[in-house]
Image (cartoon, rainbow, N blue to C red; front, side, top):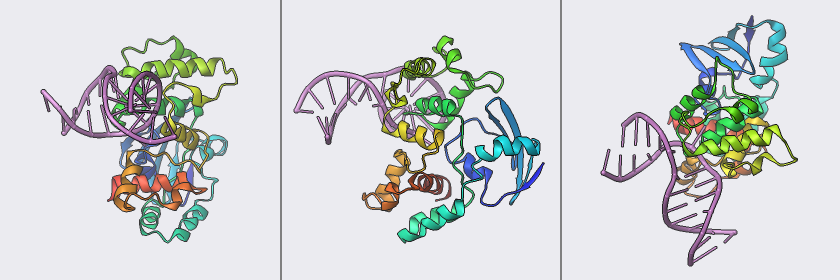
Length: 239
DNA sequence: ATTCAGGTATGAA
DNA sequence: TTCATACCTGAA
């Protein structure tokens, strides 16, 4: 199917560190596995061609890509801070979206992400998946994790699987390996709580280098997670 | 050979 | 509460 969508850029999203299973097939063409589905999507400016039906788009991918959220409004709300760095970031990341990915996949992905680099995170998640299917809690609980490149994080994955299988009213934040940063990532990417702003090394670098070590106001705002996303992209990929 | 990479658990001050 | 340190792994 063909679709026209504004403020939506696949490369920007892929480079924003929120998803680890997108595969770039060629220029402007991506293969995206999610929830036992696979989408092939190509982009030319604001025109998109998707390998799914209209029905599947409305039922699943529209929400996955967060296309129902008003990003124009969020971009506008950044202006009130009269902050040059933030507004440059918003301008350069005008196609950014906070994906609505599967909670379980986000939880596991960001447990793996701690003290780790994107290349290795991607590799480990590949090792965990079979035929594009992300492993269920039961599968991870049974799976031998010692040869997946997880290092010391294997016990965190086991604890997460145990938690998911028998949710005893315990919060996901009690899982071993979930600290402040990972919790913020899980809330932002897995629960779409846009006020959460993961303080990773890039955000710390921004505070240090762009704000003289003083935390800017937008980091504590309603859309802090969205601002974080465009600033991360701007600092890491554009500057 | 070190250092570093999108942090956290642990134990001491 | 805050602070230093170890931690799997693999690439530079």
